[in-house]
Structure formats: structure tokens, C-alpha cells
Image 1 (cartoon, rainbow over the protein chains, first blue to last red):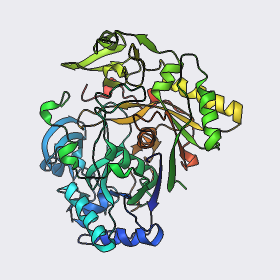
Image 2: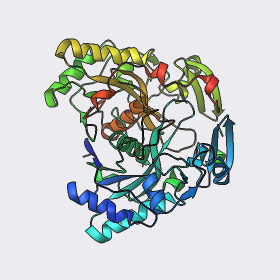
Image 3: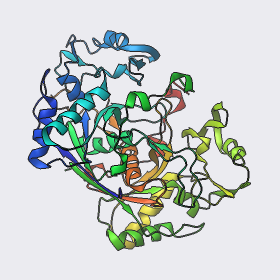
Image 4: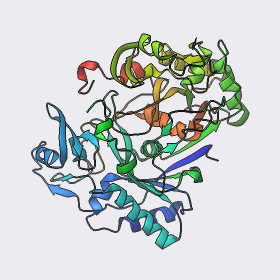
Length: 237
Length: 237
């Protein structure tokens, strides 16, 4: 089990607007091409979740910095500033640029905020799929973050439902029989990044389906509770 | 193009020892089950690269901390310490725990160091495959790193050959026609993490094959030169 995966971008979804039935649109798009089965994982772009949840704020379309006051108001703390770059800790505890606010893939006069509770957003989509199709899938809400010591961005999980955020291999033997001491793999971040490879940035594919994930990885969990590191344990903030 | 990926763990490789023909073993294992074709990506565990390159050092098997002096001698700088945890900047510029040295999946009396030049390690494997099979693949040498603000580890790229480390989408339009300003996607890190999902930690699969990667992503590049952030640009070191 778990020795191969298939990842496919889900096409055919229209533009998502505030109040839209996002889960319904995801279901329709999946069923048209790749009917969902138990233990599928769907990775959903934060952008469409935020749009459906009406997390958009009007800004001056002619001022590329008009969303910057929102960056501060959405933050729990501003950690670093350099020029136009602001690194913040969000209300959820995420450390990222601009409190996760951005203006790509939205109308020019709006800025898009992160979902209030991305784990809840994921649960809603998962519950809707189970209710409508009778199928148990996992949902990951993904966004694109930078890293302090490596150039380039990667997609990570903002929220999840139905999948263990961290696979705890502590106490299991490695290939030589030695017990692994510290190996807690953040599988939801690896799944989010894998999905980005097929979703791309400009092709408008908001959802990717990952099939072949080990059934033992499915279970309860929360990105905010299980992955966000307590500032007290942080060596770099 | 680029809208689906298949990821499969490559089995059948024996234990790798110092001086072994790692590329030859990878070729034999792949050809037995998934004959390589142009634009395949192979993600290879740092551990087998380090073993083949004899980057192992004897340590006291009865002392779980006997490799700690190596952590300091392999580092360019020690950045943080807390208890037994040492975060260093390696000679390559990677910021990670214990200078990337670990003792899992090796004999109990050795500690495994990172390859001296992981990009070169990747190039050697790529060149050997091209020479023996006439096939152009990309190679990523992957290792498992922690992150400062998120719990759990993920696999990232230490070195690469034949693939662009960063996909530069700056200046290309998003789905609304707006020009994306800052979107340089670190695809080699996302590919390394995706491969980890099938390789696992304890199953002894040192290599994963990723098929379906966009041919436009293949080209020259170096993890150390293109991904490692210059300390002068660093806000958190």
C-alpha cells in the first residue's frame, strides 16, 4: 500500500463567487471526469475557498499597495518588514508574507483574505461530499508560502479534514531495525505541494485529486492545532 | 500538459555500500519495472547517495549523542541550540537540524553526513543514465528537513540535475489576466516532498519515479546556487 500515487488536476469548474456552493461545484467537476471513491484526497486552492466564503475586501485598483493596511489588521503580530515585504503571524498562527493576503486571480479592485478557519472550510467540503455521494474523502485547503532560508514558494496546507496532518513514525523501526526517534512527517504539506505541481499557478485549476494515499493515513486532525508550532517552541520568531 | 502526474516507489535495490555504482543500481531497478523514458524525474534519497560516496563516520554506538561533535565540525555556523537540538548552516548553506547528520537507516556505529556537493551527485546519476540508456531524465537528491514555524518534517531537494529548481512565473498572466508579480515556484522541493509520500521512511525505497512532469520544466540549475537564500537577504537567521 502507498507505493504509488496518481495526481490529476480537476478542470471544468467555473469562476467561484461569494456564497457559491463550492462543494457542489467540486463534486460536479470531479464526477464528470474522475468519480470520487473512498480515500481520495482533494487539494483545494485557498483562493476559491476564500471567494466562496466572501473573504474579499475592496481596495484601490490603481494602488498596488492599497491592501497593505489589511496585512497589518489581519495579523496577530508583525514579525519582520523589509521594504514592501511584511512577514506576519496571522490570527491562525501561520507565519507568512502579507498575512496571506494577495491580489492574484481576483478582480483588480479586491484583495483576498485567508479563510477564517481553514480546517472548518475543509470539513464543510468533506461533509458535503459524504452527504451527497456517500464517499469518504480527505480535503486539504492549500496556499502558497515562502520559506525563510530557501528561495521560491511551495504550496502548504492551511486546513484539512479526514486526514492525519502529521504521520507519526516515532517508535517504528527503520529499514535496519533501529527505532526512528524523531520522524513526524507532515504529509498534508507534502500532498499540498504535490497538488501544486499539477494545478499550476495560472491555469485556473483550483482542485487536484490525489489517488492512492495509504488508507491508514486517514483520520482526524487540524492544521492549526497539529502543525502550527507554538511560539514558545520557536527558535526563530 | 502537466495536468497529471504518476509517482511510484522503485523497489528491488539492495543495500548501498561505499563505492557502489549507485547509478547502475538505480538503472537496473528502474528498468526491471518501469523502464525510463525522456522527462522522467527520479528522486533519490540523500542517504543512499551519502553511502555510495562514503560519507559515513564511525561513532560510539552506545552513545546516542556521539555524533554531535560532527554536527559542529560540518557546520559553517551554529544558528541555534536548545537542549540536544542544534540548528546549523551547513557548508552548502542549508539551514537544518544537526547539519543534516543522522543515524537512521545506517549501522549503529556510524553517522551519515550530507554529500559534499549534492548537485554534482545528481549530475553524476543523470549523466550515467544518459550514457547507458540514451534517456534524458532529471535527478533530485532529497533529504528530510524541519521547518521553523510548522511542526513535522517534509522532504526537500538537496541537489538536482536536468530540471529547473525554480519555475519562474513572474511576468506571466494569472487566470484573470493580471500579471503575477512574485511567483517563483520551487518545483524541486515540491517534487521531493511528493516522492516522500511513496518512498516512506521505513520501507527502504530509496528512489521514486515521477512521470508526467511538464517537458518545459527541464533545464539547467543547481539547488545550492538557485534555492539557498543568501544570508544577506535573510530576515530570520
